[in-house]
Length: 312
Ligand SMILES: O=C(O)CCC(=O)C(=O)O
Ligand SMILES: [Fe+2]
Image (cartoon, rainbow, N blue to C red; front, side, top):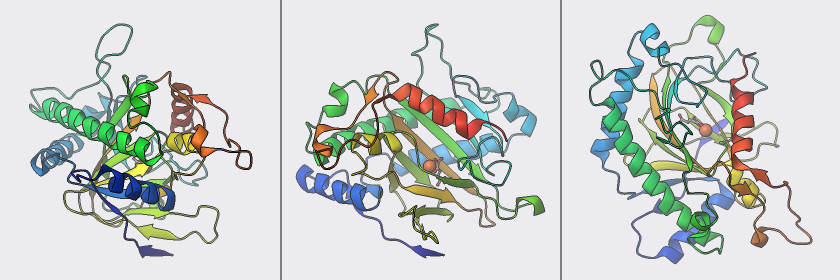
C-alpha cells in the first residue's frame, strides 16, 4: 500500500531563525524528512553533478571496477554489492554507486578518494569537489538550526567536535530501468534508515523514493516522496535519533525500481569519528530515560557499514 505525501518545506534563506527552527522541529518529530529550499546551491552546479555522474555510470563495467570501493569506503560499488535491509531475500540491492569522502584525515596524509582518469572525464573531480564543499556548508548551517530546534546553543554540534573533520560522504547513485526476471520484486535500495546525523539528497525527478513513518505497524504504509525542482530532500539519521532519544525520527525509506532509470546524489553528514553520541539532557527525564548507551560515532558507522556490505 502506498500514497503520496506532502512533506514540510524548510526555507534556508528565511530571516526568521526561530520560526525556521520550529518548523524543522515539527518536521523532524512528525516525519524525519523535509524539503530544503533556497539552500543557495545553484541549479547549474546540481545539474552538472548529475551530468558527470551519468558519464561515470555509463563507462564500461571493467573501467568502473578499476575504482572499486576501497577500505576507506571510497569508490565504486556495483549492483548487488550492498543490502540495506538485512532481511531482504535478494542477493543485494539493484543500485550502483560511487562514494567520495573527505580529502585527507589519514595518517599518511594522502587523499583516500578514488577518481576517474582525467583523460576520460576531465571536469569530473572538480565538479564533485565543488558540490561536496557547497553541500557540506549547507549541512553545517542546517545543523545549527537543528541544534536551535532542540533548544541548544546553535553552535552545539561545532562545540562538541562533531563537525570537526566530519565523516561526510557524497554518494552518487544510479538505479536501473528494466529488471531481469530474477530481480522481480527487488528494490533499488531496500528499506533502511540512514546511519548518521542528516542526509541531503538531490533527485532527478524520476519517482521511486518512499518512506514508512511507522515501521512497527503492519501492513506497513509506504508514502511516495516526490521531487521538487531545486529542493534538497533532507532526512534525519540514526545517530541524531540516538542523540534525541527518538524525539527526532530516523525514518525508514526505500527506492523502488519503476521501469525508468533513476539517478540521485546523497550527502551523508556524519559526526567526527571520535565524537561520542549520547542522549541529550533535554531529551531524557526520569520517566523517559535514555534508550541507547553512548557510542563512538566511528565505531557505530563501521558496524552499520559492515552489516550492509557483508555479502550473503
Ligand atoms: O536515491 C534515493 O533517493 C535515496 C538513497 C538512499 O536512501 C541512500 O543512499 O541512503
Ligand atoms: Fe537512505
